[in-house]
Image 1 (cartoon, rainbow, N blue to C red):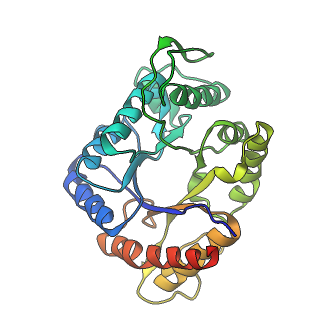
Image 2 (cartoon, helix red, strand yellow):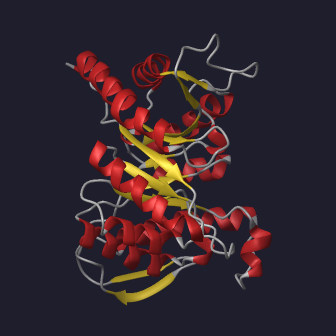
Length: 304
């Protein structure tokens, strides 16, 4: 069998006062061989660090790890400027950027920043146009003219840098179909995992939309936001009564994630704490130095 390269990372809060600790955690994760770190993008919260300023600063202090906003607050970051930002970060970091994309969720707060409110349908249309335009404004070639409903550019020179992979936080049917047509990865919403109804009913929409435009659905990775405890001893049950993953020992994590990859097409995991925030340093160490290497080894054996 052939398994898509599986990526492992962690998610972190980015409060103004958390900067030094955030930097220490990402630098350690970089040394430990994790693939990515993720920060949320809520520019209307004054006590948060700006996601992209933080990502750029951290990439300058690391060597291998990639950064991404999980997910970019697109309505406050217009696509042509977003394209310039991510291609610049990619050029400066040696390609260590992933573009997380969302249509915009908290519209009351977004509109408080002076951004015109869009209907849900229009927001998804703008989201798909934005992904298309970011890719057009990347990778070199002749000047780009694009006339969409939400974005228009006239004879704009694309950056000579490839567009980063685009992972979306799509939830609704229309947004999921857009992911299938134009994106490179999907992050299931609300921490849904590979055994959830959300995953089972949503992933086929992505696959069908991809196939309809001639894309191979298997090239669109699924990267799970995965909260859970890492415990010293095995738990009697690793899922709650509703079937949600709650965590377990290192061995239980390894068994669960290996099965997720081999049986359910998982191709990435971003670790969060059970409360949805940053894991503690001890748990992050177990993740990076015990769980991730063991899962990679198990996958390699099956793939070999």
